[in-house]
Image 1 (cartoon, rainbow, N blue to C red):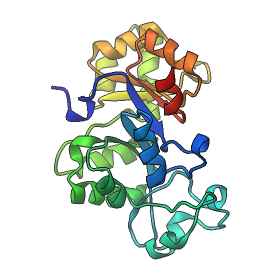
Image 2 (image 1 turned 180 degrees about the horizontal axis):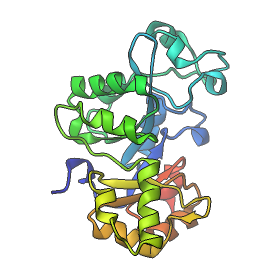
Image 3 (image 1 turned 90 degrees about the vertical axis):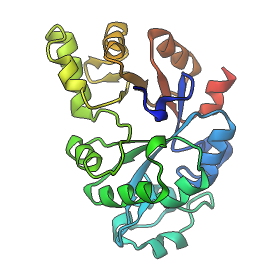
Length: 249
């Protein structure tokens, strides 16, 4: 059965941290997410970090130097302190609860960045009852699995890096032996086109993924020609910084 998260028509257009640079907005802010939806995003991609006092906030980096010029990590600061920070273009860092509440119909792709962010991320999703409109994953497979075990209702999930690599190895070198077992329990693979010598953007690999009723989404694609080529190969979705270009193309 298809999960509600995958109910919008394809292709899926994931706004990577919202739509920021072309509009002079700060990434991972309410304003950037709103702009992404206005420019045609079907899903919003972001990351969760945990504050010192256990709140999930929408933030990618471990520290605030790049986006705010502040020499501190998210985990060192309380939510109250985080709320006082102005990002480089004037925006503020939102909590996951604030964001899910502000966009009650939007679909979110959430990458849990640390173990400390597991419980706050779960708490926010449970509080807002957003289970059917979130996909929860992590680069770390143990972190991803730990989170999934704690939800009171099922949520969509995508493969962590180790699972995606194992799937490719099975496909490329083992004639697909064990492939269905490897991807069991995930709804999608979200991968770059290449990872070292691994070529994920391969039609045969994409076809094998889709034969298991899984989706495959490629990140982070900002050239319209490459977006179109990947969709022609069979990609179900594109993660991009430029949803405005995707729709324009």
